[in-house]
Image (cartoon, rainbow, N blue to C red):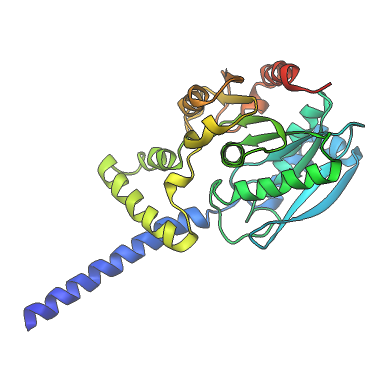
Length: 307
């Protein structure tokens, strides 16, 4: 009897530890700590005179788009071009739509208006969790549909994403058939969320314990948020994308390694382009390689832009 009680107590302790670890791991993903919005505003507006002056002068319209998951997606339409050409900008994790201003300015040079929006659980959009592209791709679909319904079938719509936003764009393009978009530009995307998490964890623990932790996280992620890590894998769906794709990555990116864009490029269908830039850490490709980044966009758009 005493042995049975000891066994049950030990099992209870192990189960409690298992549950605690599962909650801890998934909390770090689902409720990842975001940057202070005031810090982003200061970086993108207050301390960047060029962007501040541009953003102050351009015509803007604040809009709210309903997510099919029951929360509002907050967005800003920047209409500087008298043509139905739009690029929808999908920002990275912990950021807000203000980090897309630099790209909205860039694409104005090529004759495109901009739609910048806050991803779920970021900025002023709703949503309880961050899913690194799984639910975000559904919200991107809602934003694309808004632009299509607003401007009609003659509209040319492209999508530009950075980091998680790039993965979101690829997951959207590879999941939904007959989308109205004309192109995708994926700046430093991960190819597999599982592989990305393993890369991050490799700095803290051994491959064995990383694998075990991912198994636990996967189980709890399905239970708590309704999906698994394998369902956040652009590499699995990129070959379903029917529009031209431009992959951009910096060679010095140690957070999401550049081979992930190379792998995605190899798996994608034509037409496709891959540009590897020499300078800049993660998500700093444009800031550190402005001329080369601009030239890459110009070359890509030359082949996809409608007359």
